[in-house]
Image (cartoon, rainbow, N blue to C red; front, side, top):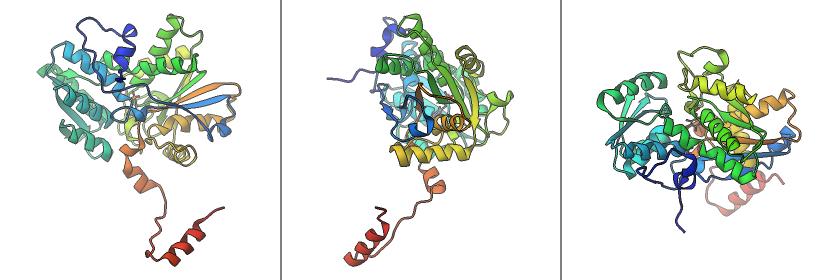
Amino acid sequence: MKTTGLIEKYKEYLPVNDSTPIISMGEGNTPLVSSRSIISHIGCKNLCFKLEGSNPTGSFKDRGMVFAVSKAIEEGKQRIICASTGNTSASAAAYGARYGLETFVFIPEGKIAMGKLSQAMIYGAKIISINGNFDEALKTVINISKEFDIGLVNSLNPYRIDGQKTASFEIVDEINDSPDYLFIPVGNAGNITAYWKGFKQYKNQNKINNLPKMMGFQAAGSAPIVTGKPVKNPETIATAIRIGNPASWENAEKARDESGGIIDMVEDKEILSAYMKLSNEEGIFCEPSSAASVAGLLKLSSQGFDFSGKNIVCVLTGNGLKDPGTVNTKVVSEIHNIDSDIDKIRNKITSLMER
Ligand SMILES: *Cc1c(COP(=O)(O)O)cnc(C)c1O
């Protein structure tokens, strides 16, 4: 049986009409995996990870991109453009290649993970690296998109949000309920906006009786929503959330306030610690940015927040393979070099055994 994508599956919940092309390369329908280890630190009833790194280009951006590209085709656009910390450009480039749209991506110089840049290159996007940060790149592409009539596929594009909200539908469809808490990294704040929109839409359709509390986490070095003012020079190892002036700032605050949730921040060392725990204890390799959701949960839990009896979902937004640089520079792991002599190998193996 052929895989149907999320536009086909959720078309009754999306602004799809007769002339909207139903396109797909298998995005959505990502695994919701139970925690085996981290749950023991939290004391909740259920803890699951939504593995958005399983999307075709390795991040949740494909959910919004497939629909933004569908709508761009419907509108007769020949070209799309975006500013990106990496994953949006990877996704735009892939869907652009598949559906014959010329793709322009603007990236902040030197601040994009190697895997993501490789994706934009191999899919054949026209890549423009600007000497500035994401926020500056976004301002530029907004102007360029108007001047040249190019489809803007950043999350300012409402179809991006519509596509991304399908992740909340999937969670509800899978657990037949709303979780009590949704933990999610916050960068440009499109995703928290999208999840909240999805949960509210399902509640309006009486698919759920309750709504989750939205728990957003920014990186401490780029936490404008937490501090209440734009950050001029955002800094964090979590490059996908290295954003100083989020486009969906107000909507993120609405999601927080309407749901009774929070938007808080985590230090890079807390992000790295969660990133390592996910890999070492759960076997899940996500991006540093993704680990901000779990870092936030661990932080609240260590502060004594009571999660007993609660169902929690942490969104793991992207695949760890996108950012091998962080592993190479931040993770201390010895590679044991020895001669291929069977006695030396036996001795080495014995010395490495822990039980
Ligand atoms: C884009 C992205 C984020 C941030 O999502 P926003 O919608 O910008 O808040 C987090 N993690 C990863 C891996 C991303 O690609």
